[in-house]
Image (tube, rainbow, N blue to C red):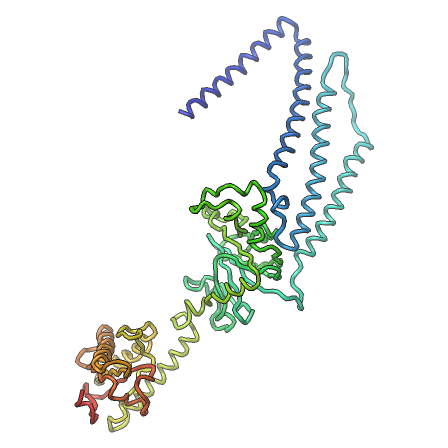
Length: 506
């Protein structure tokens, strides 16, 4: 219905314009074309003057009305040290251009009125005027010289890198479709080495895990920084062109794939201080419509990290929150972060150090089995599975147990005539019936794992011995102090249970 009404209004407006034109043509015939043209020209001149006044008043009034939403004015003074100089340059530029805007528009519309066509007046042809050329070329050139030189001086200072003796922290901001990935150094204060060829699903920045400096690095999505601390931001992009933009801090730098950039700035206003400043302005005292708890606008505002490049259909989702804290608050936040390596890489197939250790353990395990089988007697055929572990108080294997169990599977697959007795032990922290039950379940859990991997069940047996029999491989050490409570008895020609004096009591 609304659309229909709009179409009707447009049609009526067009009809009015046509009718006015027809009336004008009729008037020209009745009164003469020269009289009508003179009157129309005069009306146009006065109309242009009215339009000039309305334009200048409306643009000036609207700029003043919305000043508290504009960067650099009201509560939006720069939240960084270098931003003061940028705000100063912007205000000088705005002042010069505003004065030029007022004068040129007054001249434009006034001259259109003053030199309108009138009867008896002939236009003067002016091919060239050196004075006018010098004025409208010289004055802008002088003004622009001051603005440009001041801008270059500010640029050189703002874009300078940190000095050797500067106290600063360095972080990395990596843009990708469609979010920012922030990386903080760990306690060593150093960011580890990266290589784009190492980027994968569980290594979004391509960190080189053979570099120890990477092991304590922290990965987060939002930006958290301490106030009054110089920060150097390494800026990179993983896929397309992005732009690292912190509007409240006057920070803006392209993030280019394959071409790292940087920006150095010092936050000088905490988020709490900024919100307090907003609370003093009426524009930010209304209820935030997006707040479920009825908070006012100033209570929900945050510093923002945005992407200032049109990087794709999800460009809008690049926005992230920037939080500036007092140093002690930042230290508390920082201490609560977990290194990405520790949380996602350490002890997995993606960890080159762990895999090197796994390989070393595999070689030692195979060597121990080989030596045990090589001796004529079976008394030394006990081997502890030191790297097979269970969740506390259960028979559930932990994820890192698979490596040594897979080593055992590989050996059994290569040696068909070998049998294995799986011997479970338990600490003495519970009733003996519970110890026997738990050790039995754990030994059986390993047997099930081996059978599921394709090992013939006839080559495997399992038994739990509780806590009264020490592990043969413990060297007299109490079972509860052992990391692993599982050992195997391996023999050629099938499964054989070791003969021990106290086994019959189980």
